[in-house]
Image (cartoon, rainbow, N blue to C red; front, side, top):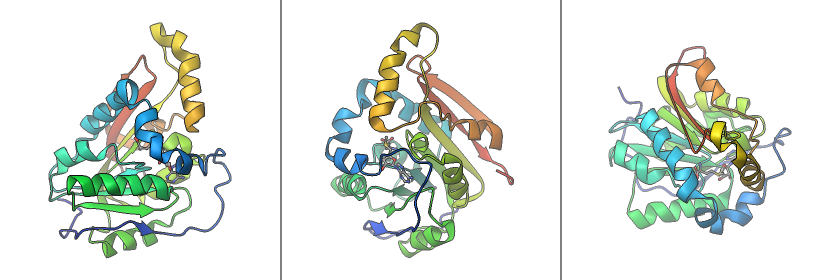
Length: 243
Ligand SMILES: C[S@@+](CC[C@H](N)C(=O)[O-])C[C@H]1O[C@@H](n2cnc3c(N)ncnc32)[C@H](O)[C@@H]1O
């Protein structure tokens, strides 16, 4: 059964304020604010990172009517692929810390005429799931979501384990979670390691973070994939009650 309970109205970007400082995060607080206008162009979407997005959403396999969290949604590059899966009766809840990235996500949604997108500005490490859940409901969504996707975002969050815990606090029982993130290339592609590390350093990602391990350790029915010489790691699975 879907967690979503009612059709959401047109949304605007909701600002949620969180106190405190994310001590473990890399010094990237303003990077995505400055980078937002150029993100889609310069982030290496084609030919590199789009492949992981496609594999991640295939592995997550959200279905019609579902409410999907997009964790660190950025400019909304996942939204078109998610919309194909969930349809107009489903809901995307994009959460990101950067108002500028969210502004672009909102523009994308408006340009496509999507009325089923809720955008929330919040820090995944610091947020209180109950307060975010209330905000989602205020915007017409359901209190808990059926699935969550984090593409190229957890490895930026410093204390990504806390972000994971907060994310699961926003999910229904037996929800599915998909993680797409980066590591050093392997095998024949090892010679590309300096380039991969440079790309991650420029984006503020910790290439050693390996946040997909949480899916391996805390989910069941895990689907695995990799791409771009192992640089992109994809995992999706179903959360368990102690996950
Ligand atoms: C590399 S971008 C990826 C964006 C998008 N997921 C994609 O696949 O294109 C990372 C995003 O994570 C966001 N972010 C970083 N740390 C965050 C945090 N602690 N809480 C929420 N969003 C965060 C950034 O603002 C940025 O939009």
